[in-house]
Image (cartoon, rainbow, N blue to C red; front, side, top):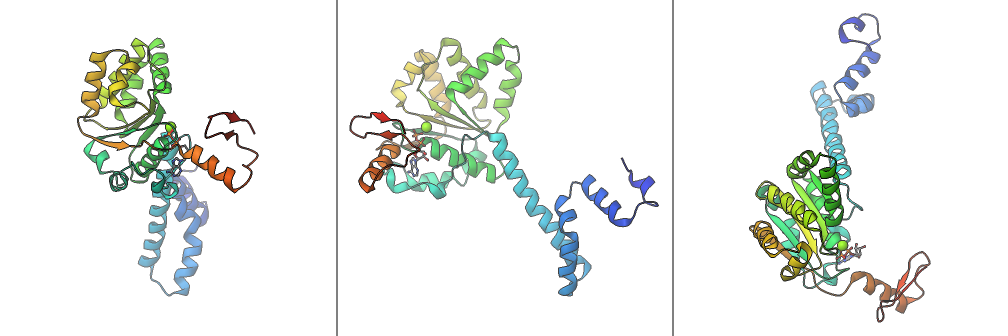
Length: 279
Ligand code: ADP
Ligand code: MG
């Protein structure tokens, strides 16, 4: 490794500059400084404007790299946004409230969001879009399903690293727990999940999606007292997104059927019988 002190006299300035910019983690300045210099000379800009332009480019790039890093860290199963969400397909969903949530003030306030509704109505899509919006606004996000989270917690418990995982889960600004209610939880699983919500209470935001109305949550947690305590914390400061309606997937496949044959790579779901014909 070259050091600043030893190399100054021997290495040519461009080599040194590249080395120092790398060390200072200014990759955009390194990549752009020649090109921007040519432009600055052409436009007769002084050294201050030249430097300002370079530094601005680095800032813009750095912000973009950080958003990308947060998106990777969030472990979204897919990247979805409100740009591709059709609000007219789900009239029960409060659009102004949803778009207001996309501004992420609830994350600052450490409030929660619960999306409730039957399968295929866009709950996961909305949760992903809210997660993406939070990443873009600089918040740390983690996306998981209830089943995967419980599995992870049990595994961590068996391997005596539960505390570390719990600390990690409590420190993220926005935790998204998708699909609560699809599988009933064991007693230990329910307790571990309860602890996660409990530890996050008023410390960070949690988004939960569920196909079950609140009065059926006891069937998932298998314990009325625990469910009551959990709902108490989760709904203390919460926005509820009502997402009951026709399944978007079924609608799509219906639409395709009237327009012509369905694409060959996707299974066809019969909207009347629910029968799935593989591609
Ligand atoms: P849920 O989680 O409620 O079961 P999903 O969010 O998984 O439903 O939606 C199923 C599929 O349909 C996904 O590919 C999703 O992107 C799409 N989808 C659902 N609702 C809409 C909508 N209103 N606009 C655009 N795409 C939608
Ligand atoms: Mg879903």
